[in-house]
Length: 81
Image (cartoon, rainbow, N blue to C red; front, side):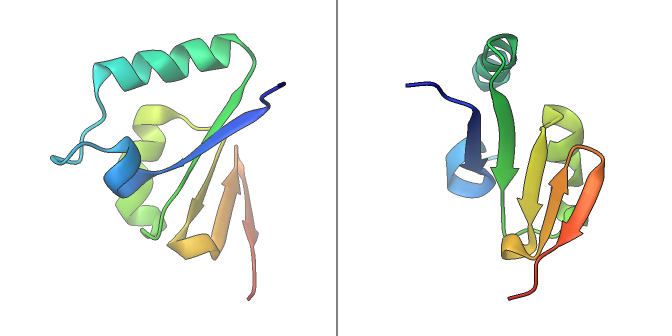
């Protein structure tokens, strides 16, 4: 298998109960990136509510507002359902 990207949810998946990210998880994503694998997160949270995780994790992309807004590095795109 040739993994290109890992995408994970925030709440109840990546985040601990206190809404923090463990040092172990941060290290895993650092090692994943060293292997050339991209990382993104998806959440129903707004861009404002997910900003601190975007800043902490520096994902290659993220999906917010339940899929209505997608960030791909420095670019934004809107998806209309």
